[in-house]
Length: 510
Image 1 (cartoon, rainbow, N blue to C red):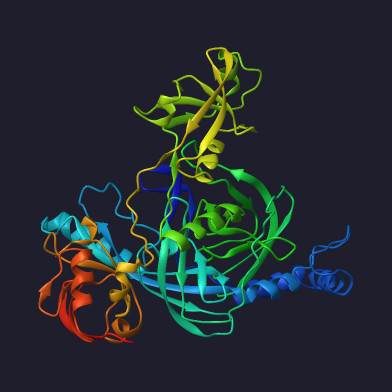
Image 2: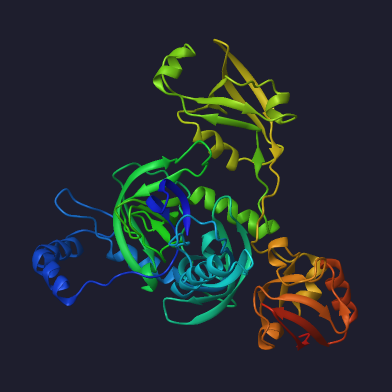
C-alpha cells in the first residue's frame, strides 16, 4: 500500500512511502557467509561486552546500547497479523501503464488485474471495477490484557478475516473494534485473557540521535527485532499532512506496519507505519506515528467506536525566506493562510488569506504541518488561541473548533446497546457503503464487519452481506436489530459472499 507518492513517473514510482504488504528477497547462503565473515568477530565482541558490562537500556561511550533485554521484554507483546480480504480495483482500459498495480495486492491479484486489463483492451466487455483477493501480513502491539491490540488502519482496511499469532505461537481470529484512517490507527480484539501488555510512553519526547528498536513481521518473518536511531521528529511531507512522523533508520519493511517503535526504557514511543524507498524495500528511512497521538485515537475508538476530529477551516503552506521578507517577517516560520472556507470557524474569527499563524496556544509554529497536528490533538468545541501576523501587525485570535465531517471510513465500529441482539449471534454490522453494493440490490442488506461465535461457526465471514433474517428482508441497520430482537434462539440468515447467496443457521448463544 502506498501512503504517499513523491516523484511519480508515468509508468512507475520513483520515490514512495510504502506500507504493509508481502513479498521480498532472501540472501543466498554465500552472501550470508560473507556478511558473517565481515562482521561476525567484531559484532560478537561488541555484543559480549554490551551484555556483560552494560545494563539493558544504558550505554557507555565505547559500546553500542544493549537491546537484548529491551527486546525480551517487549517482544511478547507484539503480534503477527495475517489479513485476507478483497478490494474493488479499476480495470479501466485507459491506463497508460500495464504495470500500474497497487503494491498491497497479492501477486495473484496483480496478475489477474493485468490479464483482465489486457482482455478488456481487446474485447471491451468487462466492467470498470472488479473484486480481487488481497492477502497481506502486518503487525500489532497488545495494549490490553483482555486482547485489545493496536495496529495500523491500512493493515486491516480491506480485511475480511484477521488471524493473530502471539509470540508463544497461539493463534486467534480477531474482530475489528474500530479504525481511524485519518491517523492510520486501528484497534482489533481477540478472545484471550491475561496477555502481556506493552508499556506506552507517557513522556515520548525524542531527539535526533536517540536509539530506538522496531519489532514486527517484515515479509511475514514474525517478531523480528531491528534497531537504529531517531533521524528526525515531527517529519511532515506536505502542508496537508498532519501526522508528525517519527523518522528513524530502524529497518521497517512490508509486514512491519502496526508494530511498536520502542525507546531504551522499553516503552512504546510510536507505531511503525511505513518507509520511504526508491524500490520496494527498506532504504534507511522509516516512519512511525507518535504514541501520544496513537493513544488519543485508541481511547476514542474504545470509548465511542470512532474518532471525532476538529477542523479550523483553512488551508496553509510553509513560508520560504523570500515570502517571509515579503510579509515583513523576521524569519521564515509560521503557517501562511492560502484559503479560508466559507462559514467556517476561521472565517467567523476573522482569519483571512495572507495571514500568517505564528503560534497556537502559546506554542510557536515553525512549519505549516504543525497547525494540523495541533488540530488532530484537539477536540471539536475546544477553544484555541492563535497569534496571527495580519497585514503587518500582530493580533490575537480566539477560535472555537468545528467538527470535521466524517470521511469515507470502512473501518469497524463498537457495538451500541441497540445492537446487542446482533452481537449475541456473533455479528457486528454496519450500513452498506455504495462501493460495497456490487451485485447487491440498492437499499438492501447490511455489511458484516466482524464475525465470532455462532456466525463464525456457521461459515459467515467478515465482508459478507446480511440480506435477510428468517424470511424477512433487511434494508438497514434498524431492520436487522428489530428482526433479531423479535426472533427466537434459532435464526436462518441469508448471506451473500461475493456473488454467491446462501442461507445459514444461526443459534443465539445465551
